[in-house]
Amino acid sequence: MVKAIMNGCGGRMGKMITQIAAGDNGIEIVAGIDKIAVEGAPYPVFDDIAKCDVQADVVIDFSLPTGTDELIKTCREKKLPLVLCTTGLSEAQLKLVEEASKEIAILRSANMSIGINLLMKLLKEAAAKLSKEGFDIEVVEKHHKMKKDSPSGTALALAESMNEALSNEYEFVYDRSDRSMARPVKEIGISAVRGGTIPGDHDVIFAGEDEVVTFSHRAYSRSIFAKGAIAAAKYLAGKNAGMYDMSDVLG
Image (cartoon, rainbow, N blue to C red):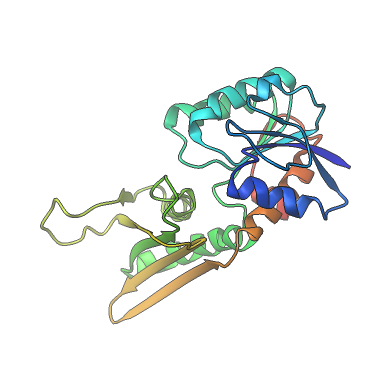
């Protein structure tokens, strides 16, 4: 059985992963990390991962970027594989992740959903074909009002997957309020909506002459992300150093 440390165990996703892992015979959450007090956790909780003395095979991280540097440092020191689900990382932190992957196994994904990761593959083909026919590309994401980063890591990942298929020639645009001009051809607009308790909605719109093609993904529960994170943790435990993603998990 894979033994995991849950970083961010007091958050919504941390609690969801703890709940789902309890019914999975292939994984056990043996310790949690959180800055705030966590009542009723079925494992010991530490306020700093460096203080955690519980042996584990992998770390699952659903927290905030402010703690990412320290998390990576400790995982490198303890040679712990890391499933990195926190979004909103800076360019410097992304470079730190890349450097750390030379020493430990890291699986980073902006979205742990199986559906989203399949959608990324489909969008590459769609973007390559529809862009040649003059279709404009827009991404609209919607999340709950408590989500702090914007746009979502998933929206960026969807845009990046399409741009990769377009030889990275397109520019990402997040706000058009300061300009008055026709829409340039080679741009991908990314819009964010925040409100209520929306778990996560993503629409990718290909707008052409007299027709529109839309790819949509709706998350009705955070459990889909928790299940993906658990699958990733079971996959990553024992792996050699390197960068992995959900496509590796899905095979």
